Length: 490
Image (cartoon, rainbow, N blue to C red; front, side, top):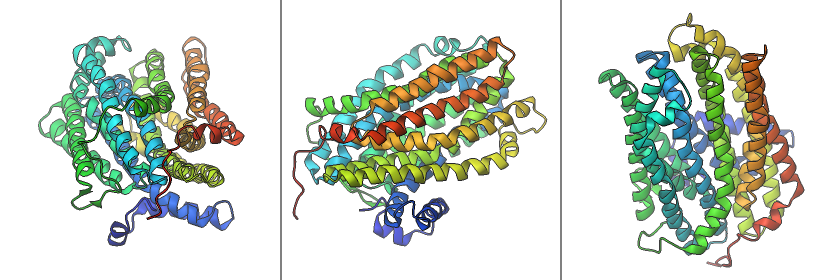
């Protein structure tokens, strides 16, 4: 099994992202740290998701850069203040989708395909039940929500305008995550990459037309986000129902829309696995509210610089998108086949592979930090640059530890042992990062506190997650979620 269909692989030109990741992995294999066959299988699953992450985070960065160039630093701050609310969509959808990939990967490994379809349909019902009320809240009271984070009237106005429109895309963004995780759990990372990266490209194109061509400002950025998510949802739905997509090929599974949608046992499993992941993801999202409020006390220049550094950190963090989900898929499939030792080996090696890739990404950004920051504001003399560049340096150090955090969390997600990654992230953010930022607002530490906060938010979860995986307690937990069906002999 492989994350890239053979027909597509043979017909596609070499992808630079895949080549760089494979080069890193083979280097580790040459010194005996990772098995070469597992390097290739991990690479095939990880690189499409990393490319998807790069496309989507580039879209996010483009939103900030485009509105910053077209409207100014107030627009950067406004979209930044709306960001945690939009991020809540991925907290909810991504958390519930962790349940999807856990159930799908184990059923795919056991060839229990009927149960696999039920997992996808029930995931759709669950994500809609959760995201529709959130969308309604953002539509009805956007100004009040954004106003909680800032007293800057112009930034609040622009942020609320953005949030009201983007609310329409909330349910679609959640559904996209279900479709993506279901396919990755069935050993196909290529199709989600094509669909979601294509959606990100559509988003950037629409942004350019709406923001610069039609001069719609932050409203144009919001509409680009909404429409691209609608398109991606439609493509996933059509492909899942038909079992294939023109230009992409056959899906590894077909999900009949005529089957049962509400299955109490499946929904309970999805909630049991996904709820701690919602909490873990929610730590990032919820912590952004007090963080932005505290950063706001330093002034709009620091807010804009911090938002820029977070976007760059997000781009550097995209290897975790791929390695975390590769770990979930490979560990889950091994457990579905009752091969616990292989699952442990995959988990350990994927983490090492992940960290090495993060080191390379961070080193590149460290060297080119200043020109990257200038690209967001369009002027090297802008005061935001002098604040943002040191923040980017801190982000480069911080993100390396995220390689451990995301890789181990992905492996634990596949086993159903999702609580410890939640606890570790909560401790890192609420126990250290936010208190350190607060100290910067009331002591001479100042903006330097943000450098320490960057480090705290990843170092603590990395240490705790690695310890949890090393105990092996997740093996017993995973047995509670494995399918009853025996593998087919066909």
